[in-house]
Length: 306
Ligand code: NAP
Image (cartoon, rainbow, N blue to C red; front, side):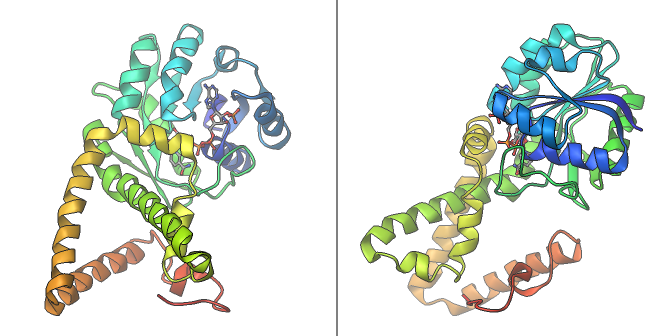
């Protein structure tokens, strides 16, 4: 057992996956939860929490680990509520997709007697809510921590131990670097998917149902990403604004270069560019971050190419 009592605040995809993983491996003596709605609390009680509380303040009492699993925009109010009720010596972490905004929102409300170690599991699906979690979500995925300077080494290694026991690989970095890295690997790709689906939605009104009918040809993968939770992603873009705008600016420049190569019929440029990008895909597979199976391992029957 890594912690005696773990309090999960917010009981959606990430929290329920953590609870399933902790239960499967016996990592927590007791899992206590709180979420906003009575409906979510009831599902959590039935599926993965030993106890649920009507308030976050009640849920964190006596916990030696508190994990904030709410959308980034809800972190500050939760931190203000739980601050006075945290047990001295407890570790507080979070799973928010943006780190600077969470540190700014949460740290001022925590007493000095607790260890605050922000975190971000680089794992997810397009599903959300308390029924969407599963024990293997973090298997072989990165979980980034952004420990503040002077953090208690024992608290850090204990949290690291829990995360590794749930199957994830842990890396530490500073907050600003984290926010830039995730803008490149996650936030801007989501912005592009949202935009592409938006363009196609507009086209659909022009060409009727063809966009849906032929969607296997690449577009389908954009729709999966663009189906992600609207509240979570609204908060991500509002709170990682600088890094996202920086990377979107670079994206715009690259797109203009590509557009120009197409317009000028510059096949050499296109071929060299696509050769470089293909090597990146190979690197991701070699690093074990995705499957090498064609079309992400989808059933071949009925598959269409692109
Ligand atoms: P989710 O499935 O939508 O669940 C969010 C949970 O937060 C729900 O249980 C919701 O309660 C609760 N909540 C929202 N506002 C609250 C409040 N004011 N007080 C108490 N509970 C509140 O979200 P998720 O995907 O697990 O994401 C949670 C966090 O993980 C976010 O910060 C997100 O940025 C981060 N994250 C997500 C992913 C991903 O791919 N999904 C990956 C890595 C990190 P109700 O159900 O009652 O509304």
